[in-house]
Image (cartoon, rainbow, N blue to C red; front, side, top):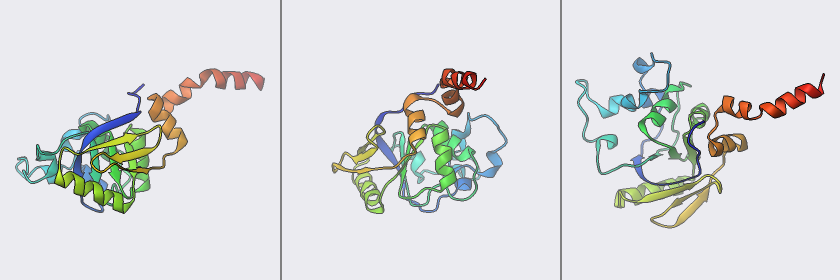
Length: 196
């Protein structure tokens, strides 16, 4: 069982780049491992570090001005290949929410599967978020899973977001797909017994 997801209030890390693909999120050369741990070290590797492995000061993850467990990303986040490792890297780094105006479908599902909540907002709301964070990096955002709302606490503006009801239940109860099935074991056994 994972940590149950309800409401998160956090500062944000802004990444106002569009069309960020999964190879940029986690380069292919780091896909050798099969467990989910350790991928956060190489999240956005080629943007975070130069060829000598030195941090690139201008990249947002290396800027101490920005912090928090919410990544605010540009339109079309997670495009390209379907690699699960991209979502693993986002989660392992410490992000619990990614906000964008559009997600690649497979990447969105991969995020949900590893307990990262992808929140799709309008382009105008996303632009407002970027503006608020740029004006004040201490800007906080509230993401409320039960009510399916995201609120820019700097302006008070909120939007609702969609989520698959099954995945919402899994996040709310801290269950992955296997754990969800196991939680229904008594019901499954009862159904099977009724068929004998």
